[in-house]
Image (cartoon, rainbow, N blue to C red):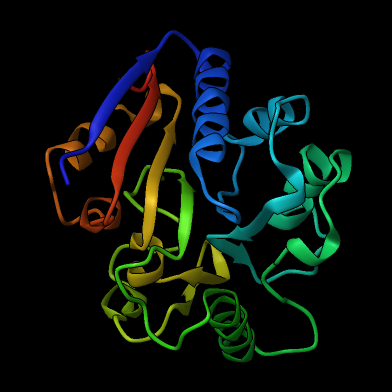
Length: 231
């Protein structure tokens, strides 16, 4: 799948364009919509904009592409950020919000439990031609990581499990969807903002496989939205 690049003037324009694409994907989806959310600072404004968007909240299921292994009320929690920016303000049934568990379990146990959640939603033990997600939202780190697929980590080679773990001296312990789960999507949308992403974005788009983001091969459409500073 050849990635498509769309350049926006600034982070606000990027967020507004991303919101348009999320709503369009929701409109074209079937009876049940599955979205995998990204953490970090870049998508926060997108989530705020979705609060007032014409989304089919009653039939949308929300998942996370990765999570720091911290309590859900921790300031670093992706779940906390998304709830504060979006999910606490829209009529989404709690049963359709599927956070990665991070309390009362080891990281390996949490990964296994989230994999069971995904398989129960999907209705099968193995991925087929039917995509797991309608939309996967992703970010891009300056080191080329996406979700919590960091350079040089064993989780990059995981092809049988849908969820894995990652430990890094600086980034800490994390739970992440693996390539097979992330790639099982109708639409994949990277949000990239800031001048510090300029070099890595160029290299990822050129297919430099030393960057984990460049190794992603979604079954559906792959788009990058970048602000002018990043592009």
